[in-house]
Each structure stands twice: as structure tokens, then as C-alpha cells.
Length: 251
Image (cartoon, rainbow, N blue to C red; front, side):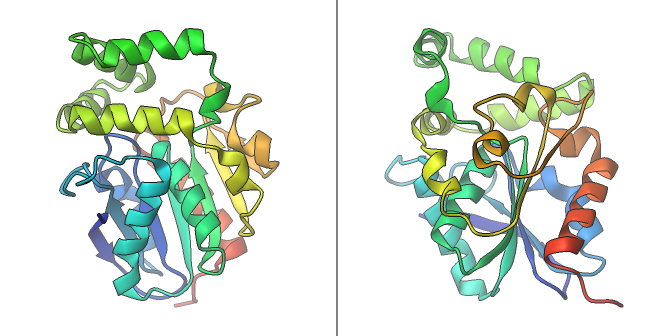
């Protein structure tokens, strides 16, 4: 099982690898890719079962399995050291990848990533999972997506289309993976400088930046897919942080 590199370009400096959210696509990073490629290589992957990547043959959509799929995709490219950026579910995968490749990752950027799903009360989790496993799947998941997608109607429709094109078993498997994953083990071993950019809803005791005690910034007025709603802001934050951990060569 491997992820698929679907957007690769630019040259110079330490490459940046982008990982999308659950039911996301590499194109969610288009603005960031275009901006960074003015002076460095930047790549966007699609995780198994997402976009153009085939589903996992063994049905394993755990965060650990997704990290191994990323490793399989990047290995042949021989990139050397990289910065890895992940959004939401992809943030969890990026964290796990940084844990298992400590000498390879020089910076970790988390955009509204997963939290410690084990801290969510069972009274909230079990009815939601039961609905996903029932005939109410489409209604349940689309209502949830609409609730976190933000106010921009065009972006919301785009995200719903991506969701509908992602197999149900991938989406459900991803949710179960987040609820089972132990981020504390990874946070305790990651050595690379780490920063998180979150929405206000992701600034609580179970948030990764609280658990790992690393810097973060909060973006207000945007939905979960901040990079789509406020691309210029995210580009600026990314570039300023990259200049501190992996400066691009001067032209």
C-alpha cells in the first residue's frame, strides 16, 4: 500500500511535503504549492483511498498505516531531509511520520490537526459511529462536513463533492483511526521544530499543541479548511515559520 505523489514541482531548499485531510485531495494545497515553488520543491500526496490513490488492499486506514504509505511513496524520490505539513487527519499522519523518521523530518507544520480522539466521551462518539455504520451514513456525514466547512458556499460544495467521491469505508476507517490513535507517544518522540495553526474549536486540552506544548496560532472566522478560505494568511504563516527551520536559498 502506498500513497500517491500527484503534484510535485519547484526546486531548491528543503522540500515541503503536504498531506491532506480525511476525504481530501492534493489540490487542497494548490495555493501553498504555487507560493512555495518560487524558491523550493513542494509536493502534495494523496493518501490511500483518496483522490487518485487506490484504496488500501487490506482495509487498514489507521494513522500508522497511512504513515507507512507516505514512506513508501517518498522513499523512491530520495528527497533527503524534508518539512512535512498535514491538515486534519493528514496532521495526524504527518505527526506519526515525524515520529518514525526523526532524522528525515526537520520541521512539522500542523494545520487544524486531529486532537487526542481518545478523550472524546463515548456518549458523543458511539451514536455518531453507529449512524455512519447505518443507512443514515450520507445524511450524517454530510451534515457533519457542512457544519465544519465554513461559510463559503463554493468551498463547502467543493468539499462535499470530495467527500462523496471518497469511499465510505475510507471515511469511516479514518474516523475510527483518529479515535484509536495515541498522539502522546508520537509527541514525546518528535524532535523536529513543530508549529500548529488552528481554529478556535481546536484550541482545547486535547489539542496537539496543548499536549505537546509547542507554538500555535489561532485563526478566527474560517472553517476547518483554513488553507482554502484564507490562503494568503496561511501562505504567510508557512513562509515565516519555514524561514526559521528550513530557509530557502536566495535567488
